[in-house]
Image 1 (tube, helix red, strand yellow):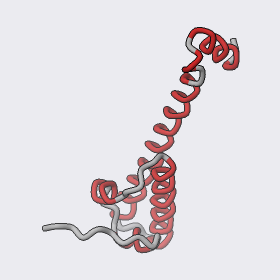
Image 2 (cartoon, helix red, strand yellow; image 1 turned 45 degrees about the horizontal axis):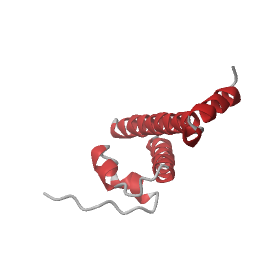
Image 3 (tube, helix red, strand yellow; image 1 turned 180 degrees about the vertical axis):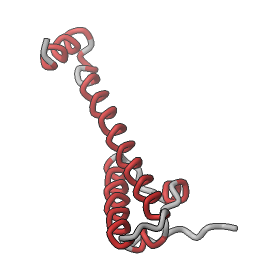
Length: 107
């Protein structure tokens, strides 16, 4: 049975939820994609903190992954990044390359 057939059957039983299965799949894919983007950010930040030989290249990679992660978060409806900047401990040198000013930490 194809996805179209499945959706047609759902519409016959519950017309108001005909796209519920598709909506669920889209949300699951967004969550998976966002999780993968976060894993890339964590890995690149860890590599940067490990004092790599080619720091410039690792920093550029970290900036790209953080930018991609922020874009995905915004497309998913998350407009504020302050919490993830703190939670992922994204260095200010990475954020500076994005044009983002990190929130001041309270001591």
